[in-house]
Image: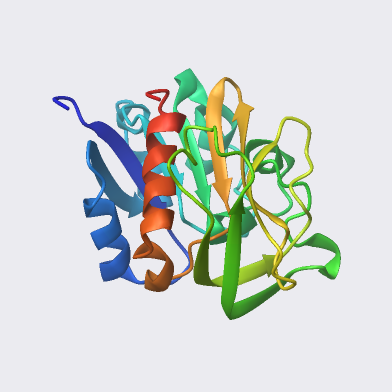
Amino acid sequence: MKDKLKVAVLLENHPYDVIGFQKMLESFDGCECYPQPLDLFVRDGDGNNEKYDTVIYYNMNIPLPKEDSPLDKYLKEGLGKDGQGIIILHHALLSFRDLPLYTQVCGLGNRGGGGIFKYTQNQKVDAKIVDTSHPITAGVGDFSLIDETYILGEPEEPGNHILITTDNETSIKNIAWVREYKGSRVFSFASGHDNRVYANPAFRKILHNAIFWTAGKI
């Protein structure tokens, strides 16, 4: 592929295995991935943040953005602009818990409100592909991960299409789904805690496929 996809990878306010995560990004053929803090991404002038084919959100920003701040303007005006792809990974599902706009983007109505949130580490997650025909899951069979699981509301928002489920009792049942937001393709995946996940071939293939699908290339 002559022209590689440009992927912004947004990181902020949550620790992660930097080396393992970077090795995973470098393994993706046909992609150039640019890790950067969310704050710098939204402040990148001259429309540079619009030049990416897809944006992976791997940040966890809890406080609501201040009105008319660069972040506030980006969330209201930049997200979903011109069909730019959106991938929301693991703890990024918890960002901006009380912001309805972000709920519309990720398709998860309850992201820890009402005291229901719980996380459990080092869980064996048996992932079942429920839509084997979707481009993101194409060529991937059922697989298992050792991961951190979340109890949240289930992704039951209108427009969600479920791709992957699990029967682990410490996790939401539906762990991966797709939807649209302002004409952009969105992929949300509750998995992705550390290198035991990053190094998993099935996880890598799904995320790699998701980059191309959200970018509208498959």
